[in-house]
Amino acid sequence: MGLPHAAGAPEHTEEPCSIPGSTLLPCCLHPLPCTAAGNLGQGPDLSARGRVTVLCWPRGATLNQEGSPQSNSSVCALRAIPVPFLQASRVLRRFSQSSRCQGSLEVLFPRLLIALLNHLAWAAQTLLDKEPEDDQPSPSRCAIPLPCHSPGPSAGAPALCVTGSCSAHREAVEAIKDLLCVAGCGENVQQMQEEGGWDMMLQGETLEAGVSLLAREMCRSPARVRFSLFLHTRDIVYCGRKQENTFAMAFYVELLGCQDMAKQSSDLQILRSYLDCGSDSMLLLVLRGLVAVAQDPDVAAEMQDRAMLDFVLGRLEHNSEEVRVEALLLLRKITAHPTGDEEAIHITLMLAEKLPLLFGDESSQVRELSIELFGETMGTLVSGKERWMQIIIHGNLVSLLLRMNDKTESVAQASAKALLICAKILGWRKLKREVKRKRTTRIAEILVERDRDVKYHVHACLPYLRDAQCDVRLAAIKFMGAAARHLSEDSRHGRAAGNDAM
Image 1 (tube, rainbow, N blue to C red):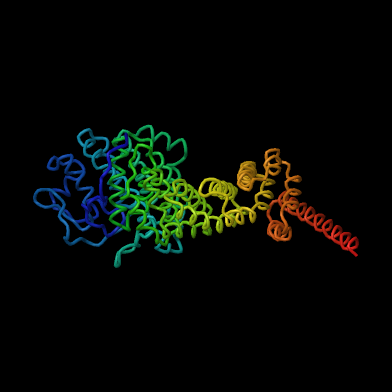
Image 2: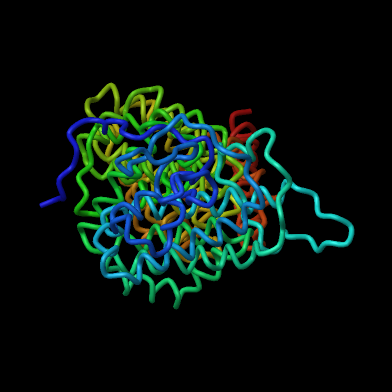
């Protein structure tokens, strides 16, 4: 049985923050009542829950008389952000080591985790935005890029101090480790260490990969932690809090893919709202989320509208290999459950136009997936009796034959399997027999013998003369040779028949 899941879209319970991760901006970034400020680290006036809450209240808030956050108050200008951020991480680590605070930290774990990640990225991006002085080393080695859609530093913010930035990043990563341990995810912390994930999060070039690795690792966390983190990140993504939604989307998508997490139409609607995002990294996350939610056949059936199909097919031409792979995986999910004959025919025609263009893709995974999907589409969606269906199959027989010579074994096998499906649909027994034996030379001879329009097959071979693989180019040349011999024999027989007639 899957975990409980909110029936509708979650309600928005938090005010949007003006700075990414500012739910974690500590007291040292804001003016506080003297009692609260003086007791940040050790004073008895604040309870364990109160001290954690101080760490989590929105930017621009102070404490009211009850010790709760009070928004819309004036704040002083930010100064040297890396140093206060370093202090915030250290305070959080002290909280995690206190038995009085651990229960509250566990409750607030999802908010603190996402806030730490976003504030870490924002602080590092601020360092990137500030040009280093001539006598100062560049901070780029420790800088971490800002999540997509996140704004830069607020207007009018003072210049940023570079001193201590590396320590702040390292201390933030250690704070994340402590948070995970408090939440009962010690094994996940160790696994991240073994896979080098924590080191990735210290470097700007690999931060996104490190966060993605952490998100995948959280799929193996205890169910209560996994579900609470899912709900929080789903809330962020649903509300479109652009300052936070890149890292939140990464966790939301990974957790959505868990087998025990229920998939609902509301998740599909959330992901649909991000289809027009301008960021490649966000686009990739959205596609992965759609693949995850399409595990439910009912939800997958809802994706068979033409707007969604046009969107996914358009991503097959994307420059990113990862985007093309996810688009193909999503198409496989969608086409696995056609809702009617009309939809099946429409899907088949659209795929027959787009998929053959990927048979020669530079990515072996894209080639394999596109060929497999072509074969599955031809074999399962519609009957092969239709004339238009046979025309589609005839037009791709040579491409599948040539791809049987692919140096990637999985691609060659997928091509043979798809060609066998086509032979069964056409009813060509001799072709079926030779495909099973993988005798490519004999297959080529059968194709030029069976089809009247051999010149069409020769034309289909031309793009493969420029293929990146030598074996494929050689196979194309051999096929053209077989076609030339066939045409020569036909011409010779034609002249002989003409002479006999005369």
